[in-house]
Length: 128
Image (cartoon, rainbow, N blue to C red):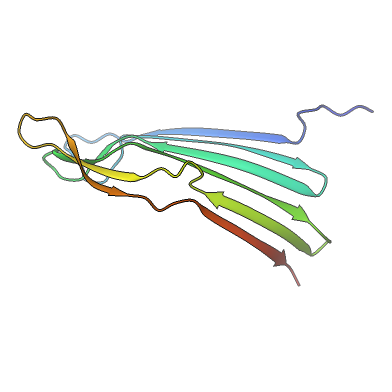
């Protein structure tokens, strides 16, 4: 019997739209999330991406957190029935958090710029 080449793949995606009649601080109007997982024999690999549109910081709408995309990857390999090794890498694209501010009629300018960097994790998981 021949198996399909795509049988180990799993896909997911979602979109969220937030509505408000007035500006609500820290609520992103658009969120998109997607991911893919591939599993074969004793191994598994995944990639997840999340995008959030710009979100207001204050009720006047003059300060906002700029849109941001985040990519995470990871995987695991089962060594024995009860032990597996895993890894994950968060914020692969090293996306910064940028807060923008608009004063008067001038265009918005960066008020705050912060990078957290890429965060790798490696470990061993065991169940008893």
